[in-house]
Amino acid sequence: MRKAVAIGAPLLALAGFAIAQQAPQPAPAQTDIAALYRPFQAPPGERTRADVAWPAPAIAPGVLPAPIPGVGRAATAAEVAGWDIAVRGDGHNLPPGRGTVKEGEDLFATHCAACHGDFGEGLDRWPALMGGRDSLRSDQPRRTVGSFWQHAPGVFDYIRRAMPYAAPQSLTNDEYYALTAYVLFINELIGEEVVIDRDSLPRVQMPNRDGFVLEARPDTPNAACMTNCRQGRPVTVTMDSRQFVPPGSESGTAEPQ
Ligand code: HEC
Image 1 (cartoon, rainbow, N blue to C red):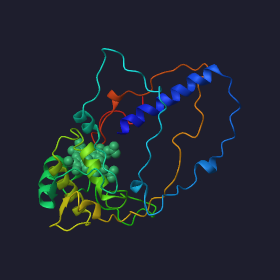
Image 2: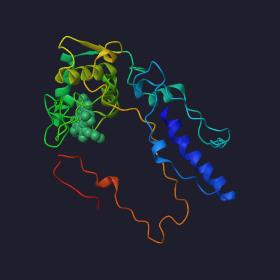
Image 3: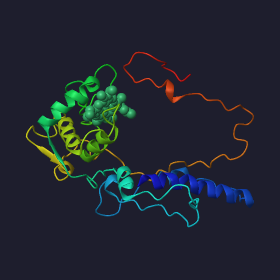
């Protein structure tokens, strides 16, 4: 249900803007940056950011626009479920299903190896999915699933959400479990016989699980500019998504045009 948050936040900002237009504002208090960037204190008994259940942001009544009669309809439960695929680091919201390393190896060869290589070593400039263990503190850190990622359920979440690159969310949950198993296997995090499902996946221990720091950093500590922001400079389009060229294709532009 990230959508509600994403939509709600700008609306709150807009509502605040409307009020700001009506009443003269007191001078903004000096922002204490150090206080904003303080380490986040997790509730007792909970270990990492991903284990912490974040409270839903309060949305004041009347902030969301009233439905326009005759336009749109309430989303059905099935439609909401289609968006509600986020899997938490502790495995919360993992779907039913299962997959083996062997099944994953075959699927990987079909759907993934063209970019990531047969063993996740990464072809051309496509990202490697294995290796880099113990490199994070070196002068050449290599961040991969095996060296960097904090939670094994996040591997399932990412692959299902985003891969294969050209057809995300196009495979079945069983296939995504199998691919997750294979990616963990090539990182030597599970044995060849392990079956990955919603019970076994959260138990896989990622090497860098304690390498992240909890922090209560706000998204935007600066006050938004609402008047005369461009100071006379013209607004121009500097980049266009049609110019995006996948890395490794050896064509297109290297710099924003
Ligand atoms: C057309 C090339 C392509 C194919 C095919 C592809 N990927 Fe990717 N993959 C990428 C690119 C590009 C990224 C980086 C995306 C980004 O960072 O936004 C990526 C990122 C990833 C990552 C995250 C790597 C990291 O450490 O950040 C994983 C895991 C992954 N892919 C798994 C898979 C799996 C599993 C498949 C097959 C189902 C697959 N990919 C198919 C191009 C591809």
